[in-house]
Amino acid sequence: MTAIFNPTGLAPASPPLVRPAPPAPAPAVVNASVGPVLELPGTPATALVPVTHEGRPIGAFVLSGGRVRYRPVVDPDQLLAAAAGAFAVAVLTAAVAAVGRRRPPAIGAVTMGPGGWVSLRGVRPPALRPEPGRPWWARVLRARRLVVER
Image 1 (cartoon, one colour):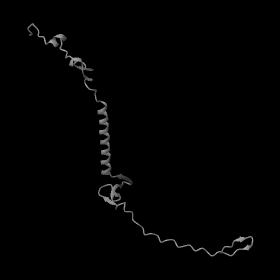
Image 2 (tube, helix red, strand yellow; image 1 turned 45 degrees about the vertical axis):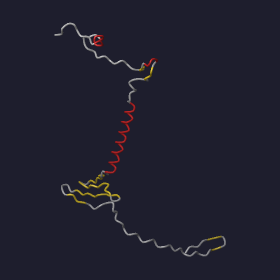
Image 3 (tube, one colour; image 1 turned 90 degrees about the horizontal axis):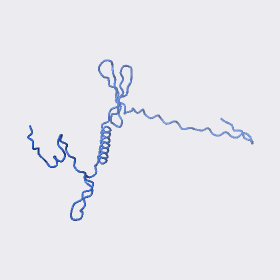
């Protein structure tokens, strides 16, 4: 019993506090995300503990030679999503490169001049194919030699 002192004298003791009993502990729930230990045959002795999340395997603990290693499982959905994303980026890059490399038209503006003739501005004359030993005017005129070729 506790007494509280105040200036008027001894105060009456307060009734003892009754604390509620703590709740009963919940029954132990076994974590369903870790599977049973699987003993693998062979030397050295190896154990495998699969790990799942929401029913899907995400990896496994491998106990071998006194070491514990975690090996993740490749998720095919994530792999497919990554491949689709990489493909989309590659197609977009190729499209941008193709648009960037587009050449201007071979001829400029085609207009009608006075008298009905057609004007092709910006057209370069075609390149002549060089033939060794033959002048350009002979190629243009398609001239033949008068001397018999042997």
